[in-house]
Image: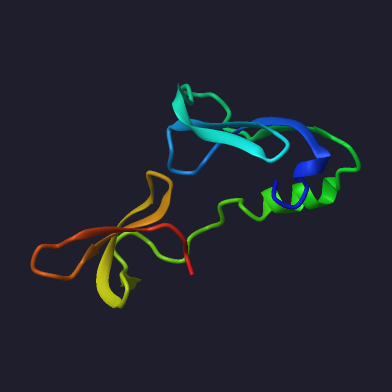
Amino acid sequence: IEQDGAALYRYKGVIAVKGMERKFVFQGVGMLFSGNFGDVTWKPGEKRENRFVFIGKNLDHGFYRDGFMACKAETLRFNVGDIVEANIGKFAKGKILKQWDDGNAYRVELANDSKTNVWAPIDR
């Protein structure tokens, strides 16, 4: 949007975010973007798919397709129960409790006295 905002007249869509039961709905005009997880949830059995519409001039279809495909959820490296090091400003040992928890790649229980839970939004 920052790169092509002047060429975008209107855009809207629905995104299925892994680990989220609610739909992410977005819309915009030019560089004005609005999007959030609204009250609409995926129905049981409903196919979770992404749908987008972009209206503009001289848009690079490959640029948009490649950009969205780069966001596609991949298979995660760690399984529930694996011991990992979580980056919490410094690296701390923890155990994977859940994959794709509320849109985050992992929920990790730190190996500290209070067993603090932290979320890892990416798998790197």
